[in-house]
Length: 159
Length: 280
Image (tube, rainbow over all chains, first blue to last red):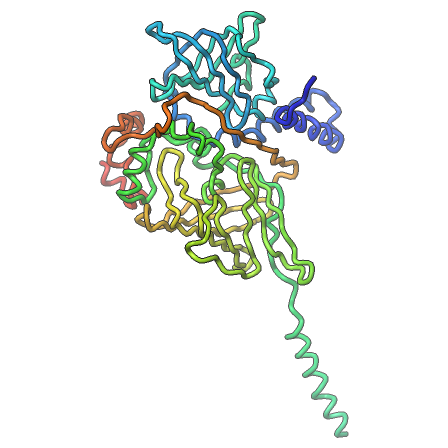
């Protein structure tokens, strides 16, 4: 499997965890995975601090769009999913859906190859404060073609 | 006899001279290590982020208030903003791990500098070798120019030459003319940093914040490559902002938390507990 530098960031966390496992005597796989989850969570937390979500989105509102993925920008500080989907009036719009940073998503088994242009997706999230921007903060994602989903399991969030 | 008397005088004098000449071992505190921020205070603001219109408890003036009232979060989708690091004064408040390394002078064996690095930051050196700050017209950077001076086992750091930054991530600005004074204190595995901000442009009084970190032996400051993309499609040259008086969200914070609107507007008086009596 091709590895990119960004994927390597998440991979390097696993290597670090392996070294920690031997150093700390954690021979249980469950303990190892728990520590890995904590390490990923802690190391990815700075990604939150780029901007205030409360200032950017209406966190008390939820919108749902269904359409075709145009581009998956897997990167830091925040990944973006660009989707062509109709708005509430049925007019086709280009939506920019903000997601976690590459390092954080990497710890949740999301890579730059997880989504590709042409995928049919259903996305729920918080709408941006400027409706003309058609911007959403990701809360949930589903790809009906193969059942891929994100946002429904514990830990599948970003703040 | 005379020789014995001379010896009795010279020897103690020599001993005294040696005592004053030998420099005692330095009492410098070692701040180096991997540190993890603690969120026992201000967690909602420092992690998820502050709400629009929340200027409470910050001694801002009218100029800062206007900048914040006309600020729009969408400005951070612009290419110039996407990979911008937190500047040296704000980044203490972020949720990132911190790595502090020390630079030792090989001759004097004293600490020449501490280097601070967070996940999404530049290298922030603090120079302890007595070098002066550059002239006012020298380059301003995200890390600024920082020098440190020991105060017992605490370190007092003075930072100048910062690029414009922010007090809070809801538009409250901090100017490039500000001077930051930090007091670092380590007590065992805990590091407390008091940051005092003096800003002649946007603050009516000095602004003080304290932040705590705990030593994290297994800490990790991972690589953080950042690249600029088109996050939101907008017209060329468009800069998201509100015209003065046009921001529709300024009352949202006060209404949501049932606070008098005036109290949320910040200013020196809102820092002190006596202000509560005014709200009644």
